[in-house]
Image 1 (cartoon, rainbow, N blue to C red):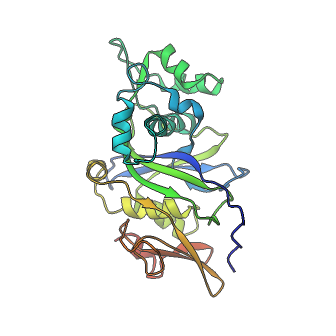
Image 2 (cartoon, helix red, strand yellow):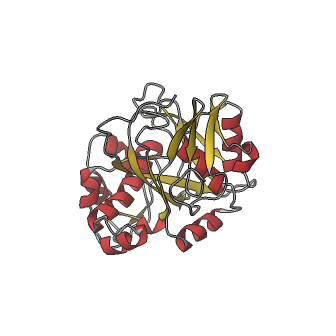
Length: 294
């Protein structure tokens, strides 16, 4: 049976995730990081780099820290009820988490410089220096233009995996050239570059664990043949708001998404299946695994 909905459910925490992509011979690859096996939430699961919004993220200003004004970032996020500083902070959170968790820094030099020392920036963050201080010391400005809003996911009242609730904005971006992604061996213990199809196949075969938002996002990405195709699609759309609706089907947990007969939103938000069912210790579509691949 499904867990009982708590009388006072947790308010979702604002968070940001960045889906980092690179082109390869077999098609676009996505970076996945394995969360530490002792993590308090989604231990051992492979995820995209990301984390919760920190208060300091919303304090970084244009010109000195960002390549766009808050108003422009607010408009691109397409969330009228989110204030411009918080909207900009979500972009910052995605970029900061990418630097912290995998060492990739989407930034540009100020004052005519040419180098972006991602390793040094990451080391300074790990020493406890605030991101604004790191950027000032290294004369860098974050490249928010490289991020394209992709989707927004809000954890159900009863989470399908883990115990916390998040209101997460997913961004897509091309991984910066000349930098190498490395997990931090603290929050994350492994890193993989895989095509979306290969990642889903490894999940199907029990080689990696994925959470439902990653499963559905990878299914969406599997329908694109290049990084440029993903970014073009992101720039042409309004990022969909996805509130998964779980229900109990004879003691089996099923998660449905917009467009499903059991979901209150009748218009589809994503390509692929509209529901996932827990079976064989995996979340899989009723139509079979191939429904994830199109």
